[in-house]
Image (cartoon, rainbow, N blue to C red; front, side, top):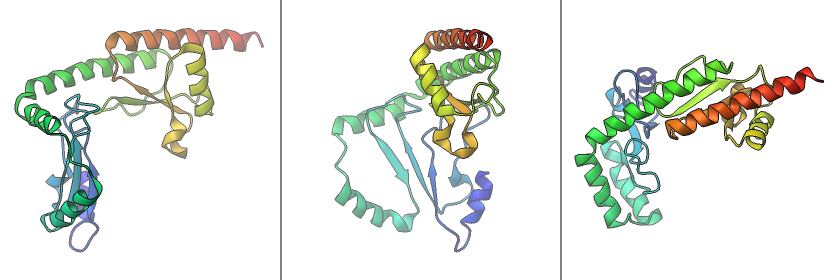
Length: 208
């Protein structure tokens, strides 16, 4: 897919903006970047995901050389300089956090496998397993075609927060997005609550 997108930018084609914030969190194969396929791209990245630095608000952009000056002008007029200690934290992450980053990835992979196994055991369909980041989009149409109402019901009944598929467009309606960014213990606890919710829902349906 990246190769096809890169091909679009050839010659007088459009410039590409590639959000690669999850680069470094791939579980199968190596991480890829659009820059392998074109140099006519703006690559957006940061420290919040792969380096677990959520809240530090530190990132970077890689841009075609002939657009750097315009970006510098934009930055100078619209953004406030990042605090110095935050910048040094980013330097430390790049220099010293390689082993930690690989350890984080292994931990997330364990959580991913636990979430996938748990969701499937509960009857949710997962057609495409996530190979990066920390989210699973699962088919819940056997429960409801209204993902917003279903997500609200799960939250109110079980205190488990999921994202309705409708938030990602019409094609994802009837799906729910689950996050495995939390601890393995909390993932198992959430799955247990979902299991009780589904059991109660079935009993309620049977008595109607």
